[in-house]
Length: 345
Image (cartoon, rainbow, N blue to C red; front, side):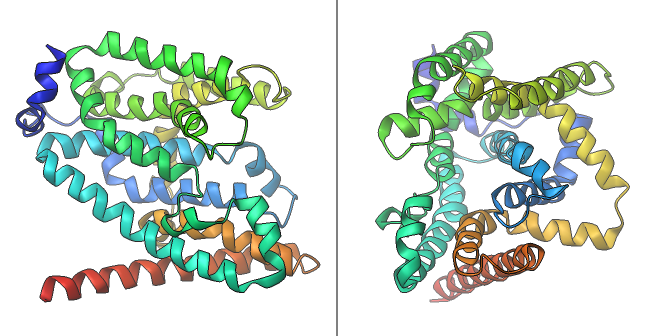
C-alpha cells in the first residue's frame, strides 16, 4: 500500500486540507518570520566567540535550540507545500530557495578564504573551509536540510498512512544513532556516516513539525503541553551539566528539545505579542534573511576573532553581527536581481 502511495505521490500531494487550520498552526504561521528571527539570533549568539559574560554565555550552552526551531518550522511549512502543490512545484521551490543562496554565499566565502593569507590554516581547521564551501556544504545543516527536503514527500505519505509505524521507525533510528553511531562520529560529519548521523539526530524534531502541521488541533486550548516543556527544560539543564562523553547524551538533548518544541513556539509567540512593533521589524529582518545569515555569520565571526582578538569583545560582536547582516542582505539582493533579469530575457 505504501509503495502504491509513493508511486501516486503527485496525485496525493495535490490533495487540499479541508479542515480548518488549528489555532496553533495559524499563530505559528502569522509569527513565522519573527520566530525564525529569534532563532537566528540565538544561533548567531551561540556561534559568537567574542564575549563570555552574561547573558552571552547562556547562549553558548543553550543557543542551539534555534536550529531545532528552524527544522520544526520547516517540517510544518513543507506539509503546507505538499498539500497545495505538485511534487514538481514543491521541489522547484525548495531548489530556488536553497541552492542560489548556498552557491553565492558559499562562493564569496571561499574567495574571501583564499584571500585571507595567514588566516587560511586556522579557518580551514576550524570551519572545514574548502572546495565544498562553494555550495556551502562545509556547513552540516545544508546536507541535512537537502536530505530532509528530498525525503519529505515520503515522510508526508507515511505520516498520513502509517503514522505509528513511521514514528516507531524514526525513534528507533534516532536512538540507535545516538547510542551506537553519534559517540563515534562526534563533531566530525564530513563523511557519509557523519552526514547520516547528524541528519538522523535532528530527524524527530523535523518529523514532529510535519505531524503538528497535520494535527495541530491536539495542542489547541490545552495546558498539558506545559508538562513536556518543563520536563524538557529541566532535562536540558541536567544534560548540559553532564559530560558529553556519556553515551547518547547528545541524542537525549535533541529528544528533550523535540518534546518541548510546541510549548517553546507558543511561549515565543506570547513574547512576540508583547514586543513593540519597531523591535518586531528588526527581529523579522533576521527571519527574512535567516538562510543567508546562517551561511555567512560564522565565517565572519571567526575571521574577526582571528585578526582582531585583542579588541573589545562587545565591539567585535557588534561588528560581526553588522557585517553578517550586510552580507546576507547583499547576497539575497543579488539573487533577487539575477532572477528578475533572467525572467525578463
